[in-house]
Structures are given as C-alpha cells and as structure tokens.
Image (cartoon, rainbow over all chains, first blue to last red; front, side, top):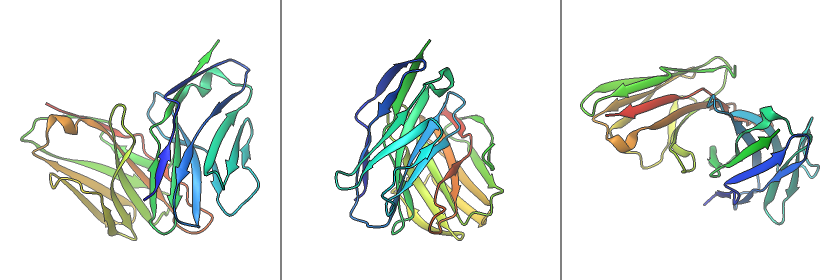
Length: 114
Length: 114
C-alpha cells in the first residue's frame, strides 16, 4: 500500500524568511513521482513542484525547491523568501505508475506573518 | 485557470434529491479522477477513469455513481445522500504518460447535504 505522511499540521514563517515542510512516503513501486500542491482559500489545487523518482537531482521552481531523499523516502519542500501569497494548505502527493493513483497527505497549513 | 472546470461551484441538496456534478477538461488528458475533501481528513480518492474505463472504485457507497461518457467529461451522480457526505468534491485530470503525470484540479464543488 502507498502512504503519504505530513507530520506538521501547521507552520508559520515570517515574510521573507525560509520555511521547510516535511513529507514522508512509502511505496513498493520503483516508478513513481512526487508532488507538492498548494491549495489557497480559493480551493484550487495548484501544482507547486514535481520530482521524478528516477532523477537524483532535486527539483527547483523559482523560490521553491525540494530535498528528495529516496532511501529515506523523504520529500520536503523548501520555500525561500516567503511571501504573503504563499499562505495556503500544502499537500504532498505520490503517484505510482503501476496504480495510476495520486495519494495525498493530510496537508500542512502555512501561515506567513507580515 | 488549470483547464479543468467543475460545475456547480456550490450545491445544497436534500437527502432525497438527485443531483449531478460535472467536470470538464480541455487538456487532452486520458485520465480523470474524483476526490472527496473533508475537513481534517486526507483527500479521499473515489473514482479513477483511464481512457474512459473505470479502473478504481475505492469502496465508495452506491449513492455515488460516476459516469465518463468521453475522455473530456466526468460526472458524479448523487442520490439519497447523507449529511456526512457534505464535503468539497474535487475533479482532476492527468496524462499518464511517463514524464507528464501531474494532476490538474478543478476548483471543486462545495456540497452541503441537509
């Protein structure tokens, strides 16, 4: 069975500072992908960043980067230079090619303090 | 705008009503999903359609009935729902080819069962 665990229900960060959101996962599949999604109050789930399991290099997208530790099955998201617009729920998700399913964690609510 | 459109945005229905949720994607994707999002719970995968064929029915009660007439449209037919079915229902689509697996989400339908 595939599982995704986010152990931080809520995090706070000062504007312009850096914050790291944690995610661990479990799967027996070798071909899988990991994602971070953002869900602002408007409810639209927006892709923040993706990581292919077969790639060793950590993905980056502007202020967003991941620390992918495959052996530890860890996939954390780092947000640099936090902005007020970053405040949202963040979900970690796992997709396995064998199941064609996206499994989500319980989410981390990020608050950005002015 | 993600290219996935859900209607209606809000729905209030009685327990004896029959209603349908609609999802449409303009991305040429080959897979579509229904998720249920309740407060303080992970996103629950309900149904998966790959190439219009249902490949997953995640122990969903029969009062929820999906329909996928073509690869661009997905419906969720609702009848005799219970108050605990009140939730945000999210539709997503993806192109499940290697290298392009991120899911795109609609804005959801906020369902209230009274």
